[in-house]
Length: 284
Image 1 (cartoon, helix red, strand yellow):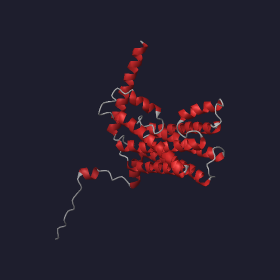
Image 2 (cartoon, rainbow, N blue to C red; image 1 turned 90 degrees about the vertical axis):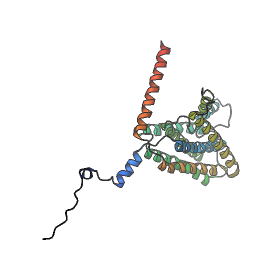
Image 3 (tube, rainbow, N blue to C red; image 1 turned 30 degrees about the vertical axis):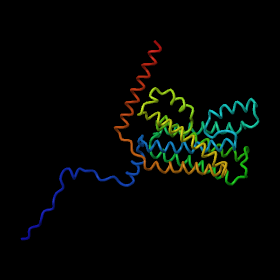
């Protein structure tokens, strides 16, 4: 009688192991994970800052207002209302200021709801911002030359650029890297020179602010000279390409681990407690 060899029985640990996640599950987990705060993310924000510098350097000579620098627009709006100068268009400034605020509000509140660091939100928000800049570029390329400083095409370009800039700033602030706002320079100038540790060798916040200002400065100069050599449509195209590179690169950002999230939450709680103690001290 032939002996039938017995098949090896799986061990208890092998039989209890869950099946590997499906491709769809892995993709969902990948998109849902928050991105890590590291040098790669800082570089992405710096590229966005460079792109914003280009946009403001081209929007001001074309439309006599800024696409993202709303401090300047606020002052120019007052100058225009007071009729101290006929150069500035109240309509242009109003569209830029209101659409920037609208972009910040929409992107900021959606980010609060879904999670501002989640990869899918960064990808979606960045792609939409980039498409707006490409649309503004297309309007300028297909429109009359020189670019008219008023009218429907001017308002459309300003609306697209301002909304995109507002959404970009909201996205950047949601990442909690407050030293790189990607747009506003005044606070960075102040924070650098009031920093108690300004001369210390290891000072990441100071380094971030200085890098942001240098890149914004470089983007503004690049935009100005591209405008002079090739026109504003070409400069906007380069800005859109820069934003597109960042949008695509969010695929490669590192994942923020749960323990890192807990550590950040603990640090935030400690900071809020210290602020509360300082406030109570001064009230007494």
